[in-house]
Length: 155
Image 1: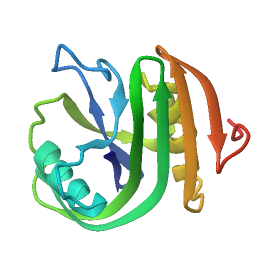
Image 2: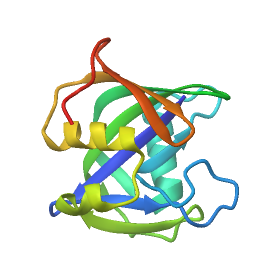
Image 3: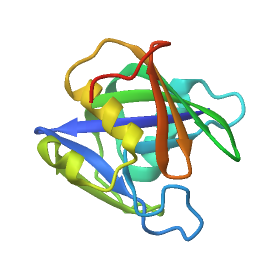
């Protein structure tokens, strides 16, 4: 299980360009911040710890927006708790996993994103209610997406 958070400020999301680790499934992609659960952590504890570790920021207000299930050939199924946040404190720090940048929401879809991320980012920006999204990949190619158990969401 993992968490992923899109922190919002002034019409921008804080994005992590994953360029620092050599062995990284997200190498060269732009993603939100988050990571894997540690033993005994709740989703919220994982979220708060990962955001603090990767950004130096402390979240003060966040919303649980959805569950994303990832399946891919050769990888175990991953369940990701998806959050947005709009209130935080602290000073942005350097991240060991990549470069952090505030990106205007209008520019997001032009970044090197996973295809499935484009689906849930649109949903977040449109204010969709809590959702369950299943994304299936063959390598880097999205081969199936199902929203709340059926069908492909409008792209």
